[in-house]
Amino acid sequence: MENIFSIQSEQDFLDAALKTFRYQYENIEIYRKFVDYLKINPDEVSELTKIPFLPIEMFKNHQIVDKNVSANLYFQSSGTTQMNLSKHFIADENIYQESIYKSFEQFIGKPEDFIFLGLLPSYLEKQNSSLIYMVDYLMKKSAKPENGYFLYNHSDLFELLNTLKDKKVILFGVSFALLDFLDYCDSNAQTLALSDTLTIIETGGMKGRKEEMTKDELLTILQEGFKTDKIYSEYSMTELLSQAYSLGENVYQCPNWMRILVRNAEDPFNYEKEGRTGAINIIDLGNIHSCAFIATQDLGKTLPDGKFQVLGRIDHSDIRGCSLLVS
Image 1 (cartoon, rainbow, N blue to C red):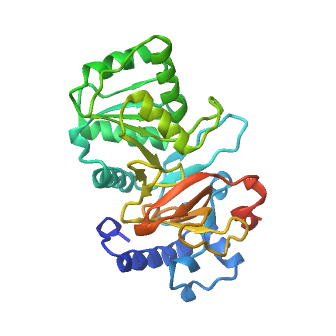
Image 2 (cartoon, one colour):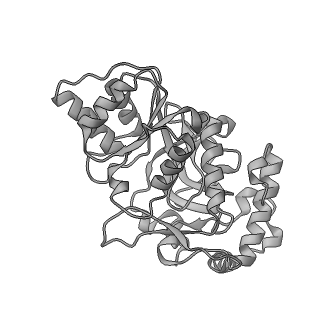
């Protein structure tokens, strides 16, 4: 398990996943109870589709952590104070940092080569955000003096982007904030200086601030507004320590230590064929000390070469899909 970042083949991944599964069955109490409840014998699990995937809701009510470690840091999902929020306890920050660096390097490039800007108001206003931790870490590795965050000061961001038009810039932005920024530019007749070196990485999330739209609709608006095809997307969540990236067309790729499976949305024990829509299960071997096998409430489909698409959320997810297993 210590060599997950050296995985090169499907056999490497299968071996590491099975070792992780057996380790977590022995050392993570909630996961062991879950597997036992399903009456699954760990010794008989020999392929990925036979591994039980823990419903993501479990992170809202349980501290899911390896009994052999202590975890003082935790990440918390965004939401209102009235909501029961997920918490992901982190035993080893180095694993998260290495996952951040190697994923970014694999799909985008070396962080040291970029200036990083963050338009992430809803996350900056909350504590214990894994996304802010990730962008902070990339900024630290970059060490560029121009690095920085923006809340609602759109005029400052506009001016800075125009001064950086000849430099390699990554703008991480939550979806509604990127749209708000384009609205500002439009209402004030402001035109961004065109730049082939600007890359937008949207991180999803309308948070009730904008009308919901499909990912394809969002990407089209951003491409037209920023006058660039470099509208990338990052897919992760509080409960994960790894990130998948889309370099366009809502097609994501996983790093070598992460995989996506698509289960039937009504029957969590059956899996959909490539190209068919279902609910997303994630294997994140970065989650060595929590749970590496998570059944999410996202809808998607797998594509050739291990790629996948995210298509939305399961309707009434509290009573369907993976939640059938929670009780």
